[in-house]
Length: 188
View 1 (spheres, rainbow, N blue to C red):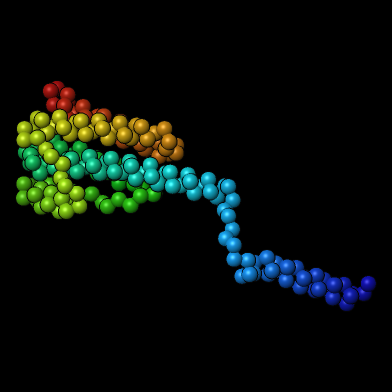
View 2 (view 1 turned 90 degrees about the vertical axis):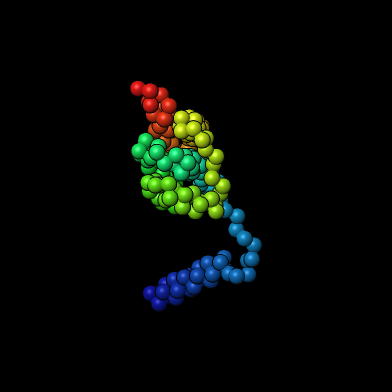
């Protein structure tokens, strides 16, 4: 074969391959392609993790609402509750990073007037939790809410990916410490 013959053969082969590839991706084939099993599994895992993050953030947000309601009902408890509330707000933000949109938490109320304004603003989204009239009972309610949130975070550890499980464990431990500080720590 001559050089010209080889070139012609290569050109014809390349043209045929291009035509074959174009035929594979033509618009004539309207049937949707099924994702491969690995892609389906990755999507399932991503959905499960997003649902887990949403549950975790919701538990922390619910706890945050309890703190806001307690602060609105008992402004005198602000020096004691404000640091714990800030911690819970930071936990909610951290739990939502990388998969759930979480609005940044606002600063805790400092007076009854700002607490009332915040309570009315958040009440439009969801009714404010009921708070006991007695400050000690309100602290016990908050401690119970901390334990509930910590239990929810602990239960979520079983299905969480490793890095998120470490975060959940840390937040659950902090919740247990907050519960102690709200009840037993006051006696010490």
